Structure formats: C-alpha cells, structure tokens
Image 1: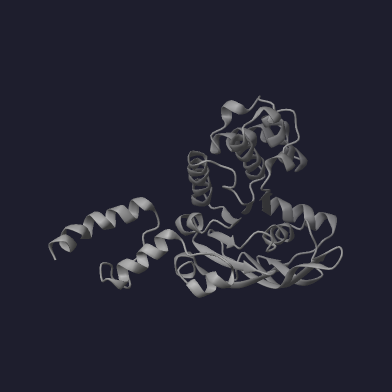
Image 2 (image 1 turned 135 degrees about the vertical axis):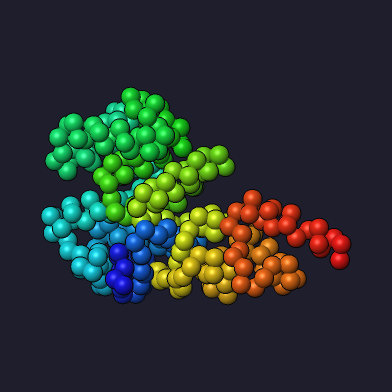
Length: 284
C-alpha cells in the first residue's frame, strides 16, 4: 500500500557545508502516530522543515499520496494546507494581537469567508480546550497555553498530517498529559501525527511507530514497542531504552510475562500487571 508520505534519499547541508540530512529515508503511514527520536542536533527539526516544504533538499524526493512534491508557489501552498507544522518554540509562530486572530490567520489565507474562518477558529480552540483564551493577548499566555494556541492555529487549516517539534518540551507533567490527550483526540479524528522527541518514555507510551534518527539518517523504523526495546538500535542513536521496556524485559526473562504478550505502555498498565502476578509470585 502506498504510504501517505514517503521520503527517499534526502540530503541537505547548511551554509558552511554543515551536513544535516544524509540520504534519509522515511515512510509515514496514514492515521498513525510516528515518533522521530534522536539526540539533540541530529537533524530532526531540519527533517520536519523539509516535510512541509520550508526547506528544499539538495537531492532526494518527497512524495505525498504517491505524488512527487514540487516547489512552485501553488504547489507549496497546497502542500502546507495538507501538512501542518508546530515548532518547538511557540513564540516563533504566534504573532497576532489575540489568540483568535492568530488562529484565524491560516483559514483566512486559504480564501475562506469570515464566517467559515470564524467557525474553524471556534472548533480549533475547542479541540485544544482553550476557547476561554480567544480574546487574550498571545504574549500574556503561559508556555503551555502558547503551545496549544500554536497547535490550534495549525489544526484550523485541517491538515491531513500534523507535525510537532518536541511537543512536550518545557511542559510540566500535567501540561504534558493534557497535550497528549488532545493530540490523541486529533489522531482519533483521522489526523496523522509526526512528532520529534528525545524522550523515549513519551514515545513508548504514545507512538504507534518510531524512527530512530542519527547523523542525518533514519537508522531504523518500525513498531514503537518493538523498536524502542531494541537496545542495539537505541545505542546507535545514542538513546537509552524506556523504563517500561526495561521492566517488561525483566518480567519476560523471569517468566512473569509471556514472551508474546503485549508490553505495558503506561505506568498504570504496569501496575495492573504487578497486581495480577504478584500473589502467585509471593506464594512461590
């Protein structure tokens, strides 16, 4: 089956010859949550800027629904309608006087009527649970509110693919949990999610698929719970295994969890497993 987006042989260097992407290949399946993991400076943000056409590769191809992407003005406008991007620092995206004005910028630039744009703003703010912030000045928002406002601006364009650069960076535990719930609702509604992160535990609990990124290349891609339990692949990407992956390995080694059993994705899942097997384990 043709993937929603496919990247092949992508290369790119910054001025001065600093290589950022080096023959990168990536497949993005429709309706999935894909985590792109790697250390800081690996080129993850550069990849996202290529995936929405903000940067043009020196070589390689990007295909969307099997069609090779082009870089003329009309093609880029169509591309960015379908592929939204939320940067790590929301201040790089928020510029209007109020949240509602900022969120409306994209829909109005699509040529929508004011009534239709207003409806999209209303839906996007509700989806991110920030309707009460519609009239607030963007510079008066908290860090977490700015992130949600930036995401609202992206989803008001109704993209097929929403990309987020380090979505949980700078958020406390509560803010991260709220954002994760909101992103899951978007995915349930049909949006394909791509997010970069170096937080392996977040990727383990949230992603359907993962791609390990290092030195400008994807060194491995696959199902998140399988790939993030691969200690050799993780070591190559200079990452440590998620805590729950390590605990799952211990349980399987000691025969407390079947080798083919689905691994626990959250702490609550792991606690339920412990409660289930602990009485028998204690009696033995």
